[in-house]
Length: 216
Image (tube, rainbow, N blue to C red):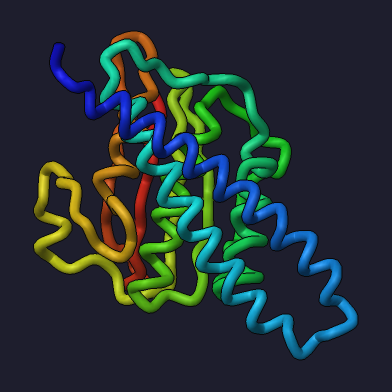
């Protein structure tokens, strides 16, 4: 019987994620205990940022394993988009000094897989920060046929011409995780009436990068 490395990898990643969550919980307890010692806050803040980054990478790897499973289908429940975005934007402001401005109706709701969308948005904003942007704006557009999109525009230098010319995104082991490839896979997992989600990248008029996540 062949050794199933995928099952082993998945099990180990789940165990690591559980340990990571326990560590994050302990950090929260420590933060409460250190309220009387503000001089330690900066050190704890850096530890928390690294822990959150590691936790995000684990979630991404687990999601890739799920997406590659032929029987996988996203959990598309109804969510208020603002509820999904609020903890992400607060985290980027607090830990990375990066502003996320939501310019859509706070009551906007749609059906999507929340974990996959969180992964896509975390990567988009993380890549923007790494490229030199200090803020991003998020807008939403709905269409008569039922499909909708999220548009993220940052104030960074924008995409390089060779990036805009690529038809497909390939996984790369960069500091920004699996980057555009993972964002694309997270959106393409959403399907409706024979259509799949897609990603479009461009440069905005203000020269910042612009990414559209299109849901069928």
